[in-house]
Every structure is written in C-alpha cells, then in structure tokens.
Image (cartoon, rainbow, N blue to C red; front, side):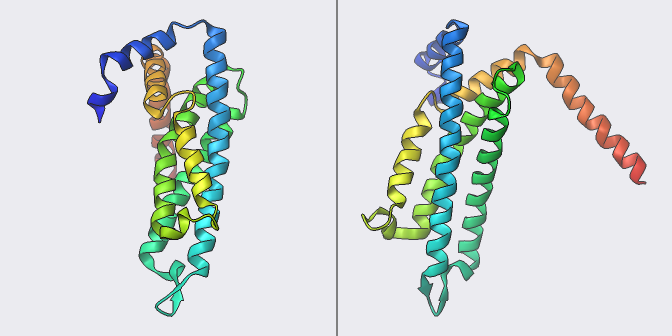
Length: 191
C-alpha cells in the first residue's frame, strides 16, 4: 500500500501542493475541514441507522444487537465516529491559527481514514438491506466514499502533517518530552 502512495506522480503532486500560494492552500484546507465536518455528521448518521437496525432485527429469538460479535463491530464503528467528530471539532475550533490549520488537516486525514471502515462495517451488519431503496444507508455510505477523496485523500493530508512535523520537529519533541515529564510528575505524586 505504501508503494502505491510513493509513486513519482504522488510525490510531484504533494510537492506541487506545498508550493501553491498560501491563499490557495488555505482554500483547500478550509474545504477539507468542511468536508471532514460533513463526514463526521454522515458517519454519525450511518452509525445511528446501523444501531437502530441491529436493535430492531430479530434473529434466533433475540435482537441482533445482543450478539457479542455485533456489539464488537458496533463498538469499533462508534470509536471511529467519535474520533472523527472530535478531530473535526478541534479543527473547527479556531481555524485561523497555525495550530488549528494543522488540526484541520489532521481532521480530514482522520475522516478519510475512518469513512470506509464505518461504511463497510455498517453494510456488514445490515447486509443486503443496506443497498435497498427502502433503507437510505447506501445513500450515506456512497457519499462518505465520495467525500473521502474530496480535497485530498488521507495519504495526501498525512503527507502534509508529516512534513509539518518534520519542519517543526523541535516543537514536537519538546511537546512529547513535556508529556512524559508530566506523566512522571503525576506518577511521583501518586506514589
């Protein structure tokens, strides 16, 4: 999978995107942030529809939602939905600052990464009912798959985040060290 993203065309595209004027990059980042927020809402709707279906559907004398394997799949979906929602909220919290601009790119990368996992999990739990005209799940999941590529896929935004981290490594390293120092202090106080 990594080889697919490291093709010369991908590298040229990533370098060209960084070379764009700041206003053009800002419009792309804002579009990506708006798309991430819409994807978070779409994933929540897909999760709600799936949860409602498995709780209503009876199999072997009890609700599908009572089976452990179904509960596990629902919990994985809920985790992705919550992480995407939080990432989108952090990205939207104050878009105009440089820290929030990187949060916006992280939000889009997270949303794009979670979209196929949530959509595929929903269709696995709902089965053939998910593609019927009577059940709107397929409308939401198709849109999630389309939005995944809008304003750049997760690999594009991961590259932007990685480049930012490398360019600002001293700040990142200080932050990581600060986290470990705080954990050590908390552990010392607790003993």
